Image 1 (tube, rainbow, N blue to C red):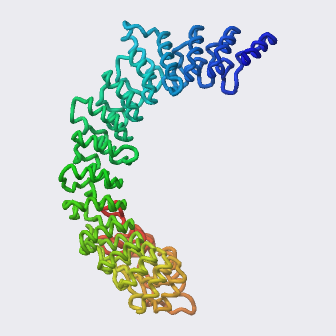
Image 2: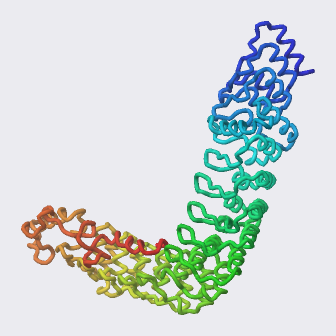
Image 3: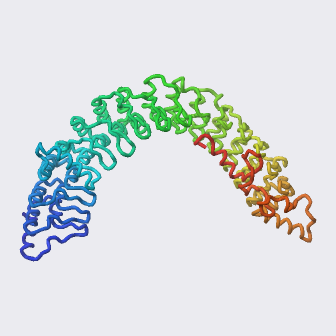
Length: 610
């Protein structure tokens, strides 16, 4: 032959040629010949003394390579020469593992013959050795390999190889390193021929794996393998097996619903399980049913099929959310329409952060329109547990189109929540200039203050939103609103000076901002520029002794050292900078913390959406 003749000539010419020389991966010429199936080369190399047990860097012998590429004749020669069939590589895999995992397309018959030949050398083909064979297969799993050859055959859909392997294994429920059986892997990959083979041999269906405690039913439903699922349901003795649960209390139906795509066969899986009596009211560890999952994932057809199984009340999950909440939050208008066809879903129930709140906070305007058209304009003023309307939610997240839609249907623009905050205050605190402008155009009142007497202008200055503060100042004409003091007697000018908002300070003063106003510590806006209270008091002392200054009487009141708290340093006062102050914006006592921290109190509500 063309290939072998140069090799033979080379071996005769160089008598001391090292035929076991390796490449960078530790492979010899024998590895290469076994891999490519060159039988004559393999025979010639073996006759010349090639090392049959030479390992590459991964611990693989030439037999591993021949088995992996289903080169039956090479395997036969290597085994006849004494190659060790049980040797494992660095991953604990024997040649049999590679044969089981190899591509069956072009060499399926060779692969089946190869398995028989390998098992012959293991001494496990005789009937009276079956018990020993089961132990041998288990040993293969325990000897370092994370899975047995049978697991590999099932996972890769090699039904012929699996048939050969099953003839030598008594325990069909042996597990891999994740606790998965051969049936689980075959179902997960959708190899229905392997599934049928395993079921005919008596493989157990209701076996949970070691990670999420899923069963083969879960595995089949997860990837939409309808044929595998039907085989399992038809073979099962217990009809209730369709409602088995994993470690998260999820049923196979829930897996099919949450991963469902019509093109992938999940709808057929859902139909098959519903036909076998799957219970759609079962709740997982989060309290969610299959209806919740279908609504959250936007599975319109699946949701319709679930609702057709019979009347079911609107079940709430552990946070009080119904399927309608989740459909609106995720913007699945098709699911919203389907749910609103049923009377039990036309009433807002559960968490008071209503489906309308859920829709507008994410700007899902199509869902908002469907809700208002179906349930009427009255829902636009519904409030959550903290008294916030849907307009509050939209203003908080700067959803201007949703805000416009709500305003068109009559939502109250100046409605205040339980802490006295109006929508424009939330928009100002978060720096949403477009939302602020829209609210102002629709009559938002800037003289409103919250329970700590902070106005929208206070919030804009405290959060350093200069563009919003300038927008508000353009709409304010009276000095009374500009000089509104909050609970700590701080005006917007105090806050603008504190945070160095130069343009805001200029505008405030030009519109009548009082530069002599004092807060509860006796500090004027000028002293608010100081980084700390102690610096402010030092500055006041210096200013009081300047030659051109008069002793201060109304701009600064020096605190007596004896009046200070024993634990506080000299001159310590409560300011917006001091998060340790006994009370603040949003605190029960009604005095002031940093306004910046207050926006967080609005955000940390009973709803995960804030």
